[in-house]
Amino acid sequence: MSTAHGARARARIEVTAAIKDEARRQLAAEGAARLSLRAVARELGMVSSALYRYFPSRDDLLTALIIDAYDSLGERAEAAHEPAADPFRRWIAVCEAVRGWALDHPHEYALIYGSPVPGYTAPDTTVPAAARVGLLLIGIARDAHRGSGLAGPSLPSELRPEAERIAADLAPDLPPEAVTALVAAWAQLYGLVGFELFGQFHRVVEDREPFFRHAVGRLARGVGLVPGPTEGAAPGR
Image (cartoon, rainbow, N blue to C red; front, side, top):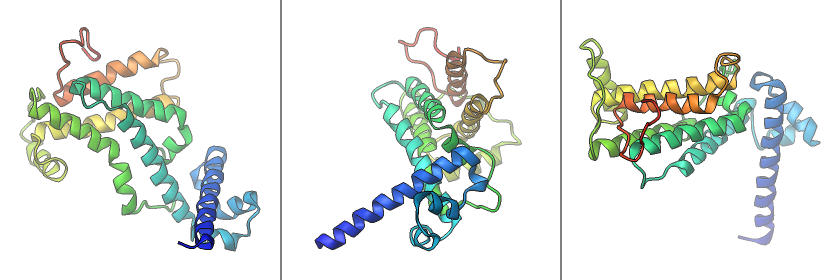
């Protein structure tokens, strides 16, 4: 790579980062629905035509921000995951990491788990990043299934065909009962975080950290994870 080419590549990386940073500031101030490429360009002292060389449309910029947010969340969850710990503890650690990231990045959390942005449809390129936390939770359940087993509830007969379809798509090596519980736990995890982040727990739940830990412990039990012998009075018990 020539020196000039390397300098151009570094400059493009720096400008792209600056565009994203300004867009995140606008998300915090105005919300995703009001994100404007022209406003971003104006704040950066760029002409709009120059910015379009980096992001051809608002949707392209939104997609980049969404992928970054999902990846940042996934990295936090993966960093908290300790493969040597028992599955129950790993589940709690990952869920707490999700909550911690959301509290640290409320506007980015709102971008990926808040109200849909009018006129925007996320492309398939967002799926790998969006799946990171879910795949981590599935992996924890898979390790438990291969080890001491899962102690999840049975399925009602009317749900079994759908449960088997979901399991075939997401984790064919796990029992349909467990996969159905995983999908429900995944939704409830983000519901718990969203209620806290968006104010629905105001004057309802004050000591939120132990409440959250207890709640996600119950979700773990619903999936069939059993606390290890060192857990004692385990969360969710």
